[in-house]
Amino acid sequence: VAQLVRLVERELEEARVDVAHFLGTRANALEETPAGVISALQLLWAEVAMAEEASWREVLDAHEGISRDALVSSLGFARMARWSEEEAEGAPKSAALEPLCEAFPDLRPLAPALRLSVCRGSSSAMQPPGGCGAQAASVGNLLFAAPAAAAFR
Image 1 (tube, rainbow, N blue to C red):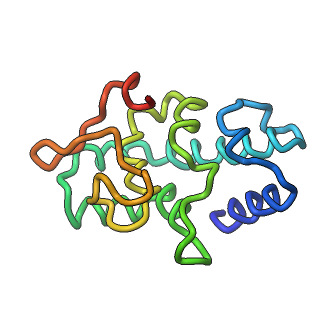
Image 2: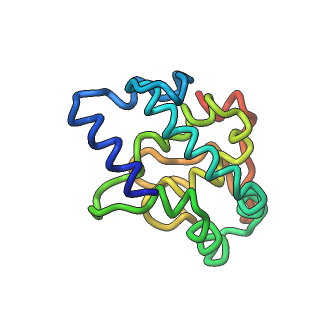
């Protein structure tokens, strides 16, 4: 599935479609338009995350460290976001959390945990390079989310 997501995004970009422009537009996912295709990709990401909601809540409650990293790495959303044919390639654009959480508000409480999976490197790093820093903090080595309004400024 991860390979398919990257293939679809690559084809859109080759057709000179600005994927980022259509993120969060909430177009009909059945439309055969760039907006519809991108909405379908975002729906896929949301469904993958929500299918493992209980495990993402465990990540939010887990202490920072190897066990939490292993749990994050075992989840479908993280595996899809991190899969790449090229080492330097980041997460697919359709997995961008701000527009994804805007389009699917049920994901907002899980955003700090999901953010750990879209950043390269150890999920323990709360402020990794590349601007993937979570709007979350670690208190007593536990994650907690900022209020929803502050999480997407």
